[in-house]
Amino acid sequence: MSLTLSELDPAAAAYLIVVAAVLGACLGSFMNCLAWRSVNGESIMRGRSHCTECGHTLGIIDLIPVFSWLLCKGRCRYCKKRVSARYIVVEIVLALVFVLIVIVYGISIQSLAYAALACVLCGVTLVDLDSYTIPNGFVIAGVVVWVLSVWFMQVPNVGFGPGTLFAGALGYGFAAVLVDGLVGAFAVGGGLLLFSLLFDKLTGRQSLGGGDVKLLFVVGLFLGLLGGLLNLLLSCVLGLVFAFVQAFLRHRPSDQEQGSEGGTKESIRTRAFPFGPAISVATMVTLLVGWPMLTWYFELFI
Image 1 (cartoon, rainbow, N blue to C red):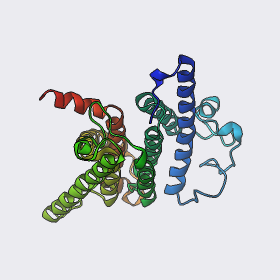
Image 2 (tube, rainbow, N blue to C red):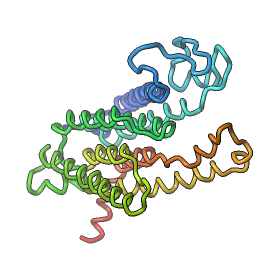
Image 3 (cartoon, one colour):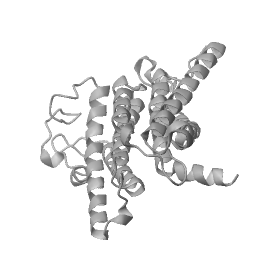
Image 4 (cartoon, rainbow, N blue to C red):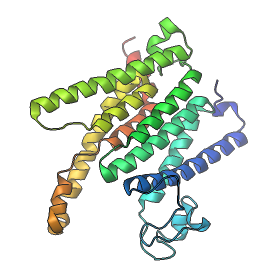
């Protein structure tokens, strides 16, 4: 059961959008902190937030999403060192994602599940960019969100969505969504795992990391078979774009001139490309506009 924004009066709809934006920004701030602590080996359960440069404990005025960064002009209030713009960017982006989820899916368990998935994908992106790894904790969190929410899902009556392929046999309740999710996860995640193992054996080099395969398995649970395949295609396209941008940034003249001790710069250049961000962005695109895209595509053949 869901309630769309069009069914609410304008004031209530506007209030809901504001709440979604504020919640998204707050969770964006939390995911920034969680990702930094995960990469730097700090506990995510204990300890107050602090400046990553001087270590000073942050006060309330330093922890207001978006506004704290703007009020302090992107600097720590205590040591005056620059605070990465990534913090405010993540807060704004997750706020926007939450608003779009509410606009597309209204007030529903589905919206809550996709918002939780967006937080997981945000954490994956930040950690993968910094460490080239996807911690199992994010994978487990994604699976838990799906297991808790799938029982409340329904197949859309119009167009495509999770469960559409199996609605004819299983009806429009959660059973079709459940089966479609499992099929999508094992077909996309498992199929890509087999392909990468074969590719690795033939070429003698690693193609995909284990974390990438696990992440594709998780998003396959949410997207089903059709959505999972579309997501895989979008992930590959975005991955190529991100890889091109990263290669361009790594080979700028300034980078080549600024060598570091022990060949650190060269070792960074030869690291594996972080595919998690591409998968994460593609997943949100699929959730927000992928189903209308699939509906339009298949209607061309009807």
